Length: 394
Picture (cartoon, rainbow, N blue to C red):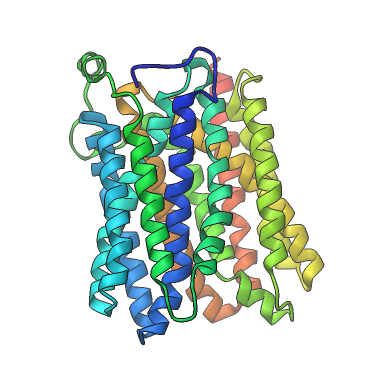
């Protein structure tokens, strides 16, 4: 962005993109919560819901590299603004076209919309931060995820009145619209400066030009963790029910609180250490305890402990990998860096949920969680190997 507030993380431009991000993610969470109930209400089969969800995820993953490329070449604000517009129109589409085929088409288009908006938002946030505080600021940026995860579902469900879903759709459309206005209130990017810096770089040719090399390590670690995360969380309510735990809501509350506190702590700590990558080791070590505790759990107590460990491990790791994936990228390559990180997240989530379902059906949820322990352990070993190699090179 053309204007940066000196030495301040929480400057007015960062606050605008931070609020826009909360509205974007809360609106998306609202869709994920309300749409299944709406589709059941209008008589759609579960397979239709699965199709709509899958096609949206595939569209999002396919569009991310292109969205990142356009954000770098043209405008990050334009990419995010168009993504928000698509999401807003889709909410209105649910209200006026309550048919299975139309919903699938809308979710397909919203896959492109959420892809564009989420890819651009982190790059925009990085541009609003002082250069020496990009890592710390981006770690705080993840707090919006926790707020959105609590706000979106609760608001969406509260606005359902009997069989009337219109208030939910209108509220969601309004949230995306307000986020779009916040984005357009930001100062325009300095395209000339970014173009000049792009000319100075040796271009990466072909397919790999859509991705950013400096974001590869944190993105690989994040992809591996997302396999474990999705494999555990998607099936957690069913796993808990098998133990006789009917209400798992306290797990999510504890996870959200500990994640919020940990994100703040790690964001502050990152700015005070010489090598933030070293913080990945204890963060990943803590995260390893999450699937292990699920594997050992036989009741509510162990599940709640797993929720606390999950919040600390995920909060610390999320803050670190998001910041590391963007802060090392050049200004004119932040869209590509964000696309690299988000694609890794999408791929890990798809693999974890799909393969997790196969393993759970064949061997049960406890065995699944035992296997999932291997993934954060693998991420931890990769981090240790990279750190050892870099320290040896010095």
